[in-house]
Length: 464
Ligand SMILES: *Cc1c(COP(=O)(O)O)cnc(C)c1O
Image 1 (cartoon, rainbow, N blue to C red):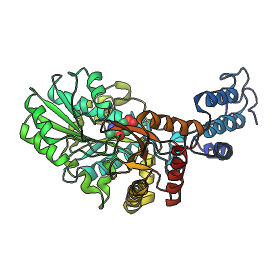
Image 2: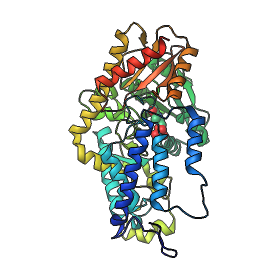
Image 3: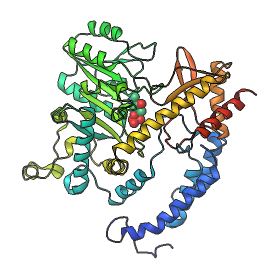
Image 4: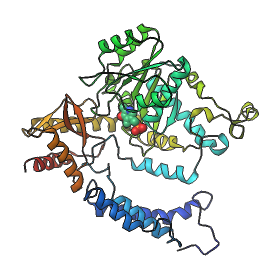
């Protein structure tokens, strides 16, 4: 029903918000269902031109003179988006560190959108800011177990967390800070150095995929002034983990080198008794990047920068009279402005807190372990198959493999063909000077049968 002229549309919050939302949610959920059914696979068939044409046709005039009403607008656009989605909940959508969000986390995110707390001042987020404070301290303690005052900032992801890590290091050591990182590091690390006006970050070659301690030692020996070493726990391309304890030891011995670990992908392994040895040494870092929208199963965005001592976050302190007047802070209103470079900020802590409470430590660890086990199972299947070559057993949940008789060009074309046909979303990565197909398993509901389907699909696509 279209609102009569003059009556503003219903709001999501307030006492009547839930009643206004309920029928709209019915429409949204139905459109998600019809859209997924129309797509019928991991992504829409036809490639960019076909998808864009369908979106253009559905969207029509983006700002029509007369509105179509809530239900029509939701039905049309949500259906179109779902029909045209690369859906990480489909087991054959496994290219990137792009996780299928848990239903419970998405439901919690709806509440966040309805209430719309903004984390830049207490008077916009009384309970949400308390949830964030408790959640960040509790999660930071998982990565810095021996620390007295661990804390974390909620970020939009690994990119922002890495930027903040470099910024905090620059504030500790000044603008001559050298950032040293492996060539395997995420591209956001050198980009952050550029953004912050630091000297160009120095990249250390990583021909075996991880940062070799001897190479780092050489680089440290030829660097003057303060250094921030950025190591990676879970490389984006292969899921490899740099030797953190040795790297931490080299930083300690150097005297002017601090360690930041980008554990956007691998950080959550620290919760798993079976896998935590892979990220041993995380607790030696001055700061750690963790993404809960990778292993963690959160809708975007859910990033963290954790530190062993909340005092390390002090350089971000900032004052704006309308948000944190000194007398308000003195009177006991929490000062939130120093917890981000953003001002208006979503309560991403809510969905994370809901997920942790719903699953418990046990449930979360089971998801992590099972997802890693799926990757091993896929690697074993491909390794046992004469038609495929596997780069290495997975460290986390990434499998690099290639059809045995394809060259790089054929492999890249195969990936694009599968995308174009809407049959599978696989990634690509370069290792040992060759191109590999990349399956990043992040779907804990993928079954052995799904892995068989994927292998059969690849088999059929390569032997033609
Ligand atoms: C994904 C990733 C990032 C970037 O994180 P975003 O959440 O995409 O900003 C940084 N570092 C590593 C190792 C990653 O895998």
